Length: 296
Image (cartoon, rainbow, N blue to C red; front, side, top):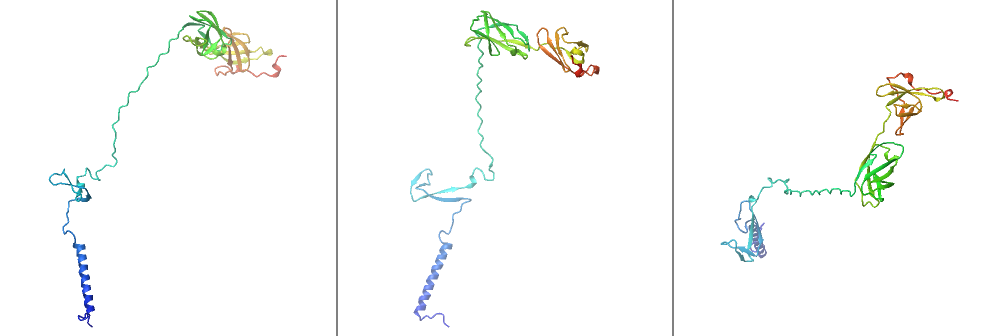
């Protein structure tokens, strides 16, 4: 069998077409693999990027720019000249501003308290006992008083009697001295435009009986005898109602739980409760009264 017949015109055309296609294919492959510049510019670790620019830098003077829109300027980036590599970079470093000195703290000068326009010099009495049951009179001595002034104790205005320009009188309620301490006394006008300095009224604890109640002798008609013991000398003392204990305290009442005495001078009541002293004889313990012991 003959593959090609040279005398056949159709066979000749096919061969010519095949030859043309082969040449074209070889040309395309040659352009793909070997086309363009046979040499490629190389740079050491250089990344080149062409950017269009309307000007170029002349060779003689790099600072001179030639006007030629067809020329492109090549920008070269060389990582070898970078300030530091990524491996040497401290990602935790941050900027710390230099602290500024704080301004000095302004401390205002304390304003002194104004001097009172008026002055009081003394109180009569200057000392009283707490728990005094009755009201008492208080005299204030000073100067330039008028009927428009009032005596105050701890800020409370009291009814005041004008004696003269140097003396004022008031009555202090017993409730103001119920507890020990110092009461602040001053004088001021009704409109508080004029006022004086303050003086302290000392309220001291009253004297108390220095005895323990340790026993009771019960008698008919309730004429009982209480047994007391001096806390200092441990001496035993028998007292009945109306007796004066220690030359100062009058026995007011006697019961199985307590004894009530009254200060003969200050009229202050004191209660002495029954206590058990291990050093005393248990026979002094107050007995409990029976019904048939009460008076008829």
